[in-house]
Image (cartoon, rainbow, N blue to C red; front, side, top):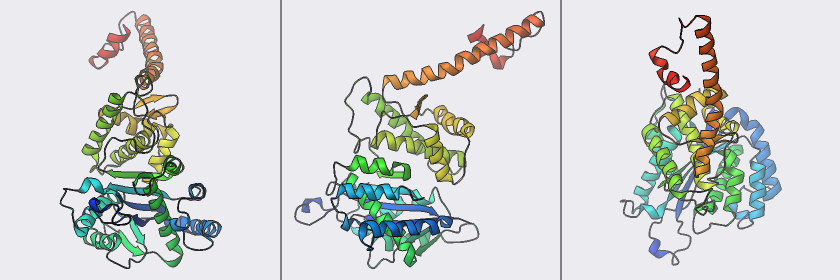
Length: 384
């Protein structure tokens, strides 16, 4: 039985006529859906902490951005307190300006498009996910999404997905989802974007399971795009993104656990590369923890190296590595780091193989050469 529950909220509006910008108040440039995933068994511990946050920062009223507004220091303090709570974030961020000309001129067609995006992002990873929202009072995105889920995910013996309304105490989770959605809006939406956005994402990054951008363009919208130079080669960076996206396109519908873990790991690398810092290495521990959180089960370092990283590289994805961890390469140094790191492993290993082979040859007067088999011809060519 599925033990995970997602609390959903959204930010933005359905207005697409950007010619009215300035005439109509608050025509958002983006529409954002946020889901907070928690284990049901953790709720008794989470709710009291949220109650304390509500009391500390909101005077006992609802957890909401209205009480924070442009007080960015207060928002960061709240985010830091929320960072201690055991939930993970899945977000869908749509640039509505890119929808013009897509046949989505009406709210109904726009919401259908958004329903499909949200459904695929949530149920592709968690097919039995239970979801909860506050009771919608109008023809909102969430009201339509309820119908979409009920139509496409009918509960049966093999699919226990469910959609419900948050109990009174659980509305704190939905309020928190709304607060996170509004915080992400201040990172991306042109009507409320702030220069503090990098700080917000830096705090939230450990909570992020997945952020789906539409369209998924190569833009550094949060981290300042580095100037071309020794630490950043734009052409190499674009190649890294292109090859990573190619893997996503090929494997996004693959439901094998290893494929899901590979997508999860690569998504985390991409998110940091594009929206936080393209020069930062990410440790094995951080990546393994991300895979664990998404699959709900621990994975070993050996599994991570042989079933996640190695197949990604075998599929043509560029992943640099060094003693500092892993990243998508963005500079010549990243490439040399990978080759140098690999050389510290390969060269001693080949040396040991040669010594092993030479000792056997000497001991048997040349009658047995363990590298004589055809499957070892490449090794034989290198060491002999």
